[in-house]
Image (cartoon, rainbow, N blue to C red):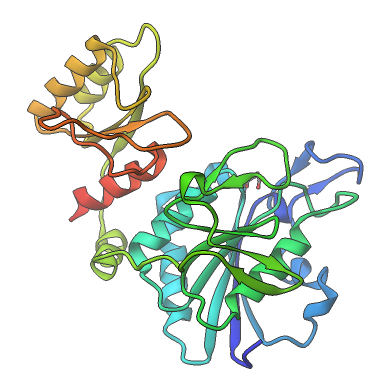
Length: 311
Ligand code: SIN
């Protein structure tokens, strides 16, 4: 630890979840324990300089744009404090990658912002939350650490790459082709590639997000066997602002769906082509009718498109 404070911002998740029995890892209610109770479960931290805030108490499947607004503002507040070395955000695993990407896009932090989580509730026989929090605190205090990252199961993932890949295992996250940024081993950092590069225009993006009277509506439409025009036509009729196509393979779309997306684009709806493949990116041929997502997975391409539409 550097002697500076770490700000711990709690938002809920399984990490703060409770089940009726220690044998039950799945039949729990998320977001039950407060931040002080979470930290009390980590004896090694007693005496460490922490400042804590319960920003929310939600199951992250219920994450909202308003909550992102509040969280981003609290992060900006603590990042601006000279005596704060870094931030830890406790979060549910289900939408962690979206919050991580959003914060990356609006904060561009010169300090570490470390999201952490758990796959088992706090009441489990062997909960993973306390170790993940301890690891996240170690990274938030690590010399030279910066940018928005996620720490889970001893692995550090960058906000751009991180994705939940497993429904049950403790090591539930991947960084795909990019690989992790590093590892946390006995509280020590082992860096294997550079910390994330700050997002361009983050400050303006934060201002626009926080000032918005209405966030742009962007939906994800998936390609699959038998996909048609109907969903896109319904969205256009409702006045949708943007659509991310979770295309098959290298950006392929059923010809009926593609025609509907091109028609939507011609009517002024912003359309971006991503892929439903868990790995790889869409490599567009020259003159492609629909722009690709620049390597962003559909859920993150949606956030990027919302921010673009706000701008
Ligand atoms: C949540 O995302 O809040 C619940 C599931 C989890 O944290 O694993």
